[in-house]
Amino acid sequence: MMKEMLKEAEYQLLHYPKRTIVGRIKRIIKSAAGRKAEPVDRVNWPNGLLAKGLADYYMQHKNSEEAREILDCLKRYYDRWINKQCKLYFLDDAVSGMALIDLHQITGEEKYKQAADKIARFLMEHETDRSGSLPYRPKQKNGYIFADMIGMVCPFLCKYGSTYSDMNTVNLAVAQIQNFVEFGMDAKTNLPYHGYQYENGIKYGIIGWGRAVGWLLMGMSESLAYIEETRPSYEVIKQAYRRIVDKVEAYQRENGLYSWQLEAKEGPVDTSATAMILYAIARSLDTKVLIGIHRSRMTRGRDALFQMVKDGKIDQCLAECQGFCLYPQVYGTYPWSLGPALSLFALTQEKGN
Image 1 (cartoon, rainbow, N blue to C red):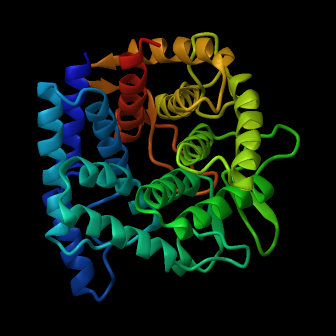
Image 2: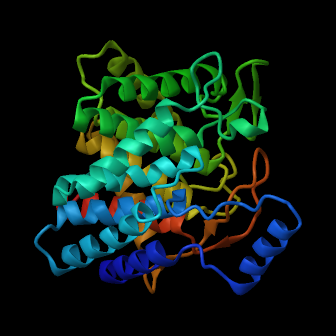
Image 3: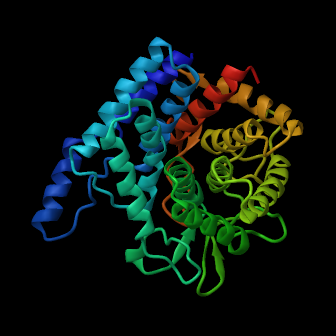
């Protein structure tokens, strides 16, 4: 079953999103009418999650035939982007930076380091609000800070800083996490809103949207894996993370999975939220940020998620969010369940957890 998942992830990494003839025609019409078409983003966040899942599997199975195929796939993915001058458009492109750092460490090829440098510069030069947080789409001039950004940006910043001795990137990540914990959480449930606006102090979106929780926990767990434990902010973030995990686990369903909105336990399951949350917990068990009491819950959820794999795909994944409170109740198979699930299975399978 894992081999089927790997094959599917490799295929999606090189082909998602599919470029249709209709889509190309629409872009041509927009350009002809003087309207700006959305750029072709070659390192979008869904692919970044797939690349990370594949890289995580590689790290656990370096001498396998699957690892050789993964390495070839990752090279093709990143070389295609590098050959197009490493164009970056959005903050969430940073998700692809995680596996890119791994690829540089594996191959030693300088072009991958230079590409990672470009992502780091893009983030360091990005517009911030007055608290130092990174607005999701600064051109929209709304100042919205999304929970998604903690998972999309902070792990790369911390991994880059740790790997290449750049504490400025780590400092930027720490600011994002601490600001969201201070301004983006619901005081009663200790679950995150989907986001907030610093200037007016208003929090937006629903409380406990599953994938927002997943992004937040993934961002914090991965960042803690790279932040030096001697930093004062490390302990602050670790304790905040532990408190959030304790609250989140209270909403785990009897079957081990999580709902699309955590509190809606009689609503639909979302395998993307489940995979993200469980991977974050597994990662923190691995780094000893969490202790063994969380292991049984993680294992129960992981086993339930594994049972949902069919033909290398994972169904019952909530479709892409369109903004605050815009969560189409459409479920299917998407990269944002497959990628985190692959990371989860790779991490826990090897260690027999």
